Length: 140
Image (cartoon, rainbow, N blue to C red; front, top):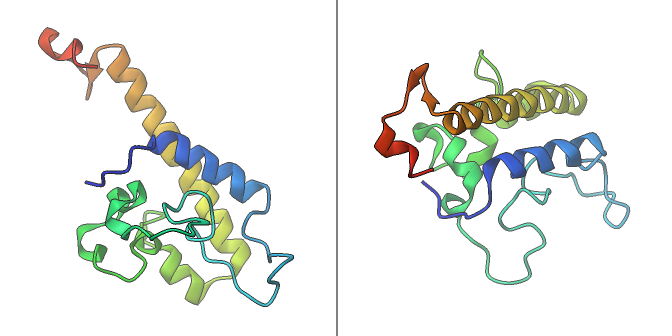
């Protein structure tokens, strides 16, 4: 588990907004340089960092990476985006940028709704369809 203190829900919402505003388009300053999904967005723990960079395992996105992909060079590129297991890594090699972005948007929207529903259930004192024990409710 990462030690990133940011709220995953807010980061995913911000990423969706960034993507919908054309965030991964070519930079005006460096149009020759390809942009990297997650790494070139404010969602990345190292975005615009002129200081010492943080290892990926400190980023909350790393909590969404399957265990078998944790050691990859860019772990967040291995987050499954759909039921067939496509990832940013695989889609960059097999799909267009538009297809990748469409899949990423769908994954972000689905993840945001899932987290909001889970939090709503927790706030209502229900977890997995069962009421939470009363001693657990005070810890939220």
